[in-house]
Image (cartoon, rainbow, N blue to C red; front, side, top):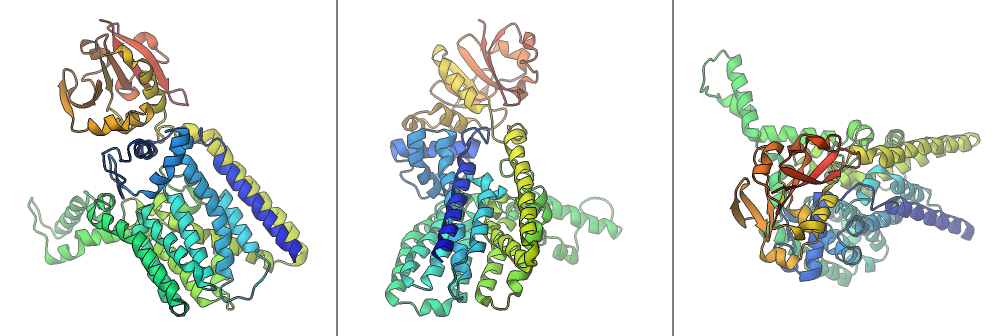
Length: 579
């Protein structure tokens, strides 16, 4: 028995080491750059580190005021130490996500082990737990979110830890308060948990009410108190402090196309009845069938079903190339194990009914927050709550198939399955490290680092520096890559600090840095740019490849530097005037 346990522990250590390598290898280089949200996170952490305030000047906020939204705080605070050590760099911003991704692999093992031991006799065999941990270690969904500054990885870690501690507390209630803290911290990490967590906690209480009520009163009271201490601040801030702003923006109910879609549908009904002209009046039936509620309901249902589609899970994944490399969230071979896992797990008569219901409701409820948002049907970040239960079912399915196979074919099956995974994983790694950097370079806002740091090297020679707004809003790219002093940023916040500049019009600014784009085109800029003005132009407003054809630079402006994407295509140009 000791030998078996040692062997299993040794295998777990190897799995953790594999997970660590896959999440830390070339973390600073792949993905190719920090995208806007990562830079926003990094500069917020940098601002907290140096001033104790977010970059809007709010002291130690519960929700961080960012340019686009109010952000949940826990990952931001988690990044403060790594930003302090490594700066606003890919490693500094992404290391917390990598750490939580690694820990999620361990938590997958611990959770599955406790989950399957509920009301079951103790056993020293934890093959399903080990396999689930291994599958999480190499899973494309988990790897993608462990290698970028995504808050969702920390949320998954807390969810798995909360469940692990909860099932441990059913045996020894001393763990309950720690389980409650893990769950209640989830809304501090990512907004989908603000809806999912209360529903999930109610589900746990209803299913395991008898076990919970039988616990010591001291443990229950302690758990309730710490839950309120941790949960009330984030709940209050969400309801009254701007925490719902993001959901209000992305909700299907705030979709600006609803009114047009409803109007078009009602007009079609009227035309089909033979009505002509303009100003058609919809009938009562038209209003009942076509309104913002039926429209939103249809989108929600489509989103919900799309989340379980083979296209999202196994074929293409999230179409956003920051959130997927375009190969599906799981390996295609795993669809077989998922189907059998569902059959084996839910049909197993000896398995406790409560954990079957819990797993089913976890999957069904886990999709709800995403389904309520625009593009939520294939949004991997908002849907990541269903990753752990699907990993569990895939592991359960493979072990179930293995157990059903005749002994003389088990080795052959194992070799065959290992070969399939080797091929699948090799294709994934090839795509990720060879093709993905170029395919996704614009999604990851490549070029901004080199552009802003080039500006920083020479801006002392100029009285005015203009940062183009022709592409992405440039403020956070400038602040983060320049590492602009947070105290000065807060004091002279550029947005709203507007001035009128000839050739630019009304633009925001901080010190000598102006955010806007010159009117006209490349051949008109010489009229406005003098030798004391530095202009960082986006390649798309130049509309000429000056890397290939530098001779096409106008005579009245000087091309100082070209900043290229990793693929070699131009991303930015630095210009100044000649007079």
